Image (tube, rainbow, N blue to C red):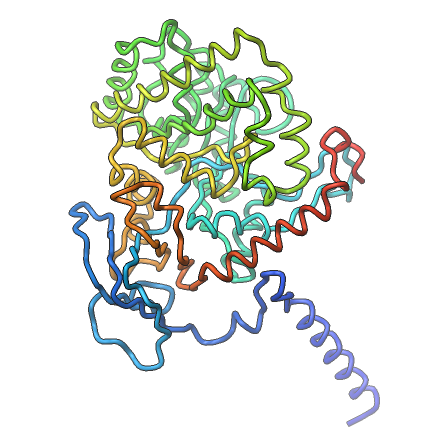
Length: 482
């Protein structure tokens, strides 16, 4: 072999060595190494566990043996294979992974003026962020204002480079001027939907400032493209809300979309809104927790300041919530009273929609001030019970029903053989007390087991990093980042 060939091979070896070193991340900070990813899939066995399958029959399977293999639920109450990793499920309860049907995820972004080659000015640690979902048993999230960065996050999760939930992505389309995906004519609306489809978005979200013609064209074109539409009821339908309910307007994203249509928040209005929603086959995501937080912050910021999960939120977002909070800064006595009426009416809306048979799914609008990713889904589930759903119905709203709406009910949403092992192991029965969804012993994420000890350690590290970096971020100076 010539010296030239030896030199060439040495260079290749050096590049490979550097690449390998770069892809092995620090385990002490809760990262996943590439070496771990290429190891053979482990077989897990949960013994003596009580299964709440969340199927239509929803019959509890007591003292069951669940085998997890090749990322899926391999068997229930079958012989235990050799060399399996045993998890003691005695006295514990197994439910499907939770699904949040309305989130806004952090991702790298440019918040200042731009120029070619500039890129993002604010960078986030995707694992730190996605961990908030994982530790709360949220194994699927529906991003309702997706950007290209969210596709990248999803790919990193799918490649096994970090722990995180499955992600469904919707393009938001609004009317008016400014940045984002804008459409002000029917033709532009249809073309924007076609672009969304071509770019890989799975759903379309409509927003408040669309005109009638553009809105209806978007919903119709989305149907032709095989894309469901979710979102707001555009302001233009004020006073004739029934005209907004056209085929393929598949889900209303907030209870306040109805509340803002009502003049005096009567039960008759709630029942009418439920009737037209049911007749159109539209589903409902109340996002009760967001309106609760808006009301709280309009009164005082003490709730946010004392939020136990605030320390896990990126320091820039903490700064925004505490020092640039428009709900608090623009508050008036009149607004507080109006928000109080909306919060109370939203609860009655849930009751009316339940009675009308409208499918209700749990979503949080996570990312809004006070609404912390992952943690807030437990708040939402508890509020749904407070509004009149049974604990079982509230769990269905965060498991089976979202999977059905997303079109992936053959993959997730229930504890059944053949489905992906997205599972949450609880220390207590959530059917007896819905607050028990917070008592998490461990999570299966796409067949990978993460126990509470590991999750707590990772979460503590996130809090430490956020505290250490707190003084580096000021929302009011975000435009100065270069």
